Length: 223
Image (tube, rainbow, N blue to C red; front, top):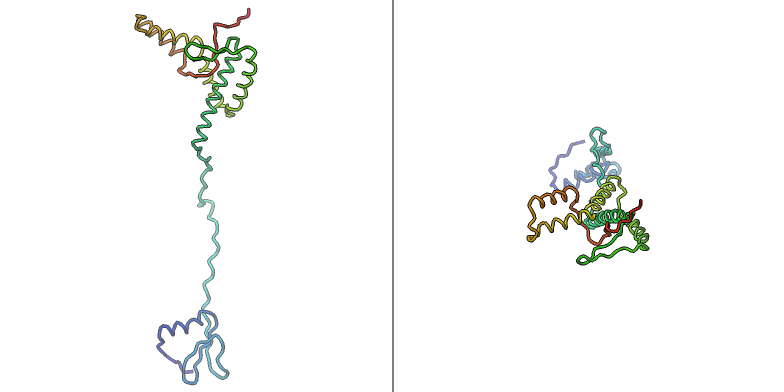
């Protein structure tokens, strides 16, 4: 069969190639010498060539997990950051815990308990009301103090510092220092320094308002 050579216009060439891309194609020439490309055989008695479209490339293999040595190590899980309200609530609970521990130490002693009022006013806790107040502060302690042993130990230590700082000895020592510093007292500098040194050594610098305090002038001693 004679080979036909033609220069096809680009658009026509593309149209002729489309069947090639879709599967088996038949190439044949009609009586006028016009070459055809069809996906069905030509009329009976017409010579033709069978042209098979090239196979599509095989699909890429599925992604395989990387070897263990090259796999990225997931970052350690981190606790979500605490929001400002969370931090504020934790601080309030910590203060309530320390105050409750301190006041329970005051109310469980054998001295009178009072709350300071304006000036030198003192409001004393009646003996009949003491059990109910101890129960209230016990609930406050249980609800506010930490379950973590280290944190709870810190809260108890700070409650002990508060008990010492708010004790009658430290309150009287501070009042004495104020009196020594008054211009009319004409105190010797050595006396002021000595009193200040005692306070620094025995009275932690922590204070609270609105809490029960111990009044050692009413200690009930037993022999």
